[in-house]
Length: 238
Image (cartoon, rainbow, N blue to C red; front, side):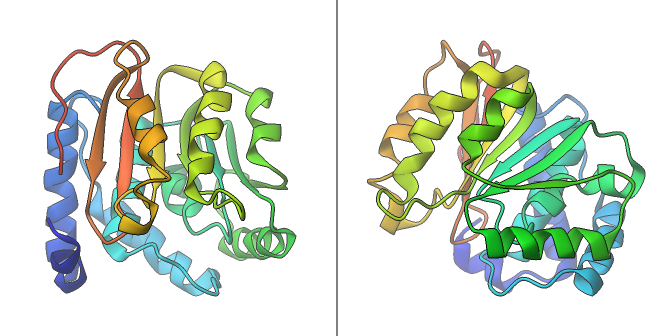
């Protein structure tokens, strides 16, 4: 699916597109076998987020929100960390099932922008939910050693190196990832960041470390999904 197609999708088409993509990822071993996108649960959360969240600007498209919800839901991640969490508009989708039903151990967003962190705290306070969310105003590398993470999203943007920060963040994260953990990187489809992300994409291609990786160009920003562990099957490119 192209970025232009993503902009034209109806609600039902976006649901079907993510359902098909989840099936492909599960078939490739990048999501657990039998994974499904629960569109009903997503839309329940979506209506609550619309009422509760204020985000000054976002590049998270409707189809990306669905995909992040599906990944968090299908992996049943109990310890989730977003580095570059801004106003919480990625963490809320990854943590969606836990927010609806509980069951998570730690849901953490880290960002160096204190104003964004304050906004994220207010957003989650208005949203409520059945699992607590912690927002840390700090460099994500300060949070990584505090737990063993099941799901990590990299969405930081360094003023000096921009998205090249993903590679040192990945190196810092790997010793603190659970077996078969999922690592996500946002903005991997943007041509402006291609050179900056070359080192990161090479690193997640190391099959001594990662079972597989898929570039998911579901919208103009895109998402890279990588699963820690030994490879078991061929991975898709979308």
